[in-house]
Length: 105
Image (tube, rainbow, N blue to C red; front, side, top):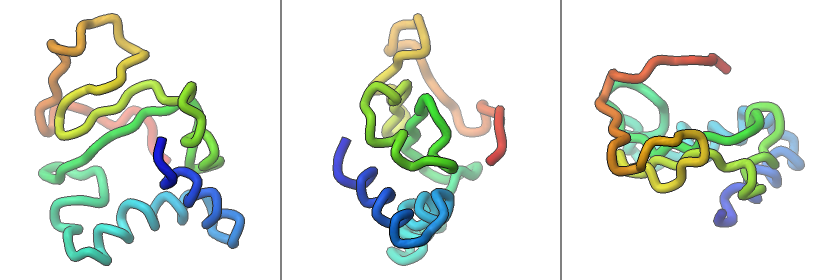
């Protein structure tokens, strides 16, 4: 991964909670760039790139730094990494509103 995951760890070392560090990189960044109407949070109608990891980054952001923890990456609606599904990538699609929350932070 890029250096963003390492930056989150620095934020935590400087006193942020892991969740505050994640919000700094997502929600707060979108607000600062004035694109929060379209980006920054997982909400119906917004654009999102999604990374699913083995671990809980809201408790320990370092799980994002280990490539072995990355289980699924979706960018611009296309799955680029899928270590959790046996289906071919070409048939995985996600329509807005077709997913549901499985776990709340």
